Length: 377
Image 1 (tube, rainbow, N blue to C red):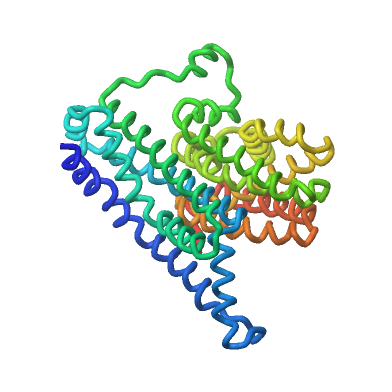
Image 2: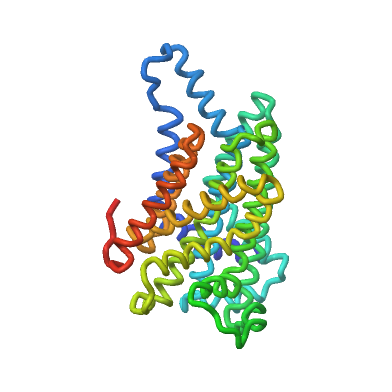
C-alpha cells in the first residue's frame, strides 16, 4: 500500500517540481558541465595535458572540503525551496484530498513515501554524490563521499519528517507561536516585526540555517586552523555565514513586500529604514556574532560583524532590482559570493566592506520607492 502512496506523491510533488523548475536546473547543469569539460586553457597546457587538467578541475569540484561545504550550502537552499514548494502544493484545494488519503497510512509508511519523494527531488545532488563516490573509489578518497551520503540521508529524513508534519496538519487550527504569546502586550518596534514573523512562521528554516551556519563556521576554521591569524580567514567565515542567511534575507524582503507594503507611506526617512535593516540582520546573525567573539580578538570580530552586515545589506538591496524572483536573486547572491571571495583572497576585504555598504545604500535609496521597477538581467 505504501508503494501506491509513493507513486501518488511522486506524481503530485516530485515530477511537478521538476516540470516547474526545469529551466534553472538545466541552466546550472549545462553551466557546470561546460565549465568542467569545455573551458579553454588559454594555450598554457598542451593538448595531451588537457584531459588531465579537466580531470583535476572535476576533482576539485567533487572531492575537496571547501567545495563540499559549498555544495552542502547549495543543497540546503535547494531543500528549503523544495519544502516551500511542497508546503504550497499541500495548501491547494485540488490537493486537499491528500489529508484523508495520507493520514490513513501509518507514520512509518508516510515517512518511507516522503523519503523517496525527497530523494527524487534531490536527484541533481545525488548525481554529485555518485560522481564523487566513483572518483573516491578510483583515487582512494572516500571520506567526502561518505560524509555526503550521511548528509543525503539526513536531509531526506528531515524533509520527510517535515512533510509528515505538514500533511497531518492541513486542516488543523494553527496555534500562535510561543514567542508571540510571551510578548503579548509589549510594544513592538516596526523594525522588529520580521523577527516575530520569523519565529512564528519560519522557525524550521531559521533553525536549519543556524545548524548549517555552525557547521560551515567550524569547518572553515578547522580547514584554516594553521592560518587563524590571517585576517582573510574571519572574513571568509563571515561571507559564508551571510551567504547561508541569504534565504532569510529574501524571506524578510518578501514579508515586507507582502504584508507591509503600506510602510512606504509611513513617515520614516530612507536612512531610518536602511538602519532598520541593519538592526534586523544584526539580530538574525547574533548567535554567529557571539561565536565569532569567542573565537577571534574583539576588534577582528567587530570587523567581521561590520563586513557581514554590509554584505547582507547588499544582498537585500539587489532585491529591489528583481522583486520576488528568488532564483534570479540566488544566482546574483552566488555571483557576489564568488566576487567577494576573490576580493578577500587578494587582501582587499576592507574595500569590499566599503563598496558593499555604499552600493547597497545607493540601490536602496534609488529603488525603494519604485517597487514596480524590475531590471531584466
